[in-house]
Image (cartoon, rainbow, N blue to C red; front, side, top):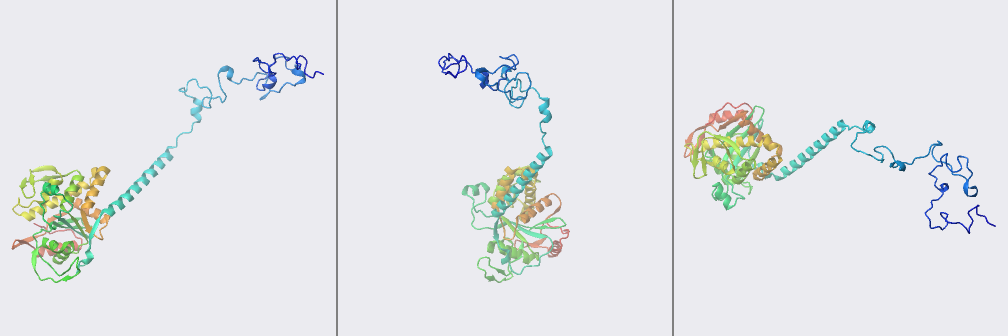
Length: 429
């Protein structure tokens, strides 16, 4: 019995599609569910099913009578819409509907997070810089070894020392900077910087000042050396037993308590000046000195490290050699502090960090000196150069045996004013 539908017997399938035929005849609509028969299709809407009772497949989607258009007939693809993956003839054309629903940027939130990021970066950088700088300070001077100290007064007193130390300098550096090759260290510069509520006062102590070396405790041996009443030049105290004896001698001869100590050598001084890009200064009268290498014309000029060192060391070119040199030292150190504190240095990391590095490498301070104390010292020196303080030499009344004798009455008044943090009224030489 032949069970195949009429015209589709097993033995005479002809070239029907899907029955082993080699022709490319497409399969009927019964298996192409996405194609819906239109009303004009074979048999109409109520046409009898083909192939022996196989029912016509229902249309998907809505039940409208219009034909389903997949989009392929018009060249479009699924996912229509300009930004939904559909065909876009010209992507540069504005789409009002899209722009209407595009989320607008939240500027307040962006500004907030930008500010938070910047503040965080600033805090991290500042903290890292602080610890880096603090680790570079040479805290080698122990003021606890100083005995019989006067009572502390109001404000803060720094003893600032410039030594002729040649540590770390090559033979070429010594020749270039005209430092010579003497062994050991001596003090070419000694100043007391007082900071307080009534401005700053910078008082130079001439190295040839006549002072008494008191009883002291050896910084290395711990042995007590009794004073003999011997008078000598002030710089001899440093040469005898270093910073601790120098502090002890200054305190004994003035009655003023020294809170902190800071020292810088030849090489370090020149490096700081070069790192800051030179220091501008006005020289009132030109001078030359073959010993220091100085050769300056009068007028405003910018000194590099080599020139700056020659400027502050020169004394043979002046009639009052030591007193004029201390005035030049005060003038230059104030100008240097002012240059370091300018925005062109502070706000420029390529200048700030080399300057800080050179300065910290060159400085020797006491064990209790903090970075805040160091900053206070430099800012106070800047204030002196800006007219917010007093700059002077220790008052001198005469000389004896080549030593400069202090004016005892003026010195007593000056020390009392500094102890009480009062405005300085005493004038120096």
